[in-house]
Image (cartoon, rainbow, N blue to C red; front, side, top):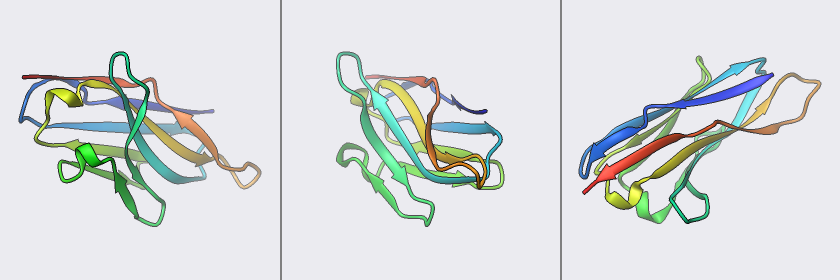
Length: 121
C-alpha cells in the first residue's frame, strides 16, 4: 500500500512564505511525476506545479516566479516552496504522484488528503 501525506500548510499573511511537503510511504519502486494541485472554495481543482522524473518543471501562470517545486528522491518526498503569497493563493493543496510499487505493477496515480493554505490580506 502507498500513502501520501501533505504537511506545511497554515495561515500566513500576504507576502509571506510557506513550504509544503508531501511524504510518500509504503512499498515504492519508482516515482515518476510529482504534481501539486489546489482547490479554492467554490472552484475546481487546478494544477499549480508539476515536476517530471527527468527534472522538467511547469507552473501555472498565477504562481510562475513565486512557487518552486522540488523533490527528494532519497526520502520520496515532494516539496512546494511558496513565496510572495497572495490572498488568491488560499485553498486546499494536494499532491499527486505517479508511483510504481514494483516491477510487477504499472504506474498508478496517488493523492494525499491535502493541506489548507490560508493567506490573509
